Length: 284
Image (cartoon, rainbow, N blue to C red):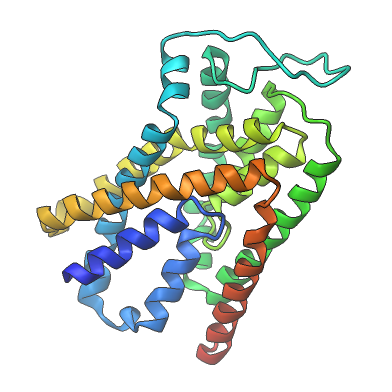
């Protein structure tokens, strides 16, 4: 793997992991357009390297939401504010506190169950190998972005509660399917159940931390023993992924809060068309 592969993959990972446009879908597209699927040596090196890059994007989440994470871990409790009328359910404020930590852990239970079911049943692997599936799920991501923003405009904005957190966790589990953006799907899920925009986007990113840690550890455990990765490539790749990822998170947070979340949908549709065209050309 050359240094230009490292820079390209790290930049792609940092951008697409957080922008609601699917990192797995873009990786599949990049591999086909550049002919990487025909290079077995490069493919063997990319699998563990991509797993390592997840650590870089994890660092960007920790850095961006460091205040929220500290508030949760140190047990800080913030009084609720901006509550919706007649919302009698247990809620949290727009800022994270100890109750968010419990909700994040609870949400990751269905995430893990659904994710493992899709992985062990072979559904995720089959979808990854199918450009048709990737293209279709990219289109679904675009549809979710549009629908969720429209629903958010009609919502008065409610707080976070147990069942809303569980719903977001379920959607996060489905996002192991390539082409279905994790950030896009979880933010959309939060908006669809009526969460305030700031709550929906913050919870979507924070709820991913345990899932990303678990997935990265599993991938590295399976791949690293037989992998040969240049240490300098790891350092450069993680640094680029973290910096680009931090910027991408800021873009998404602002897009959601200013009602521009659906602006990513046309791009998803365009990439979907390209992927589906490649699928048709290659026969699936």
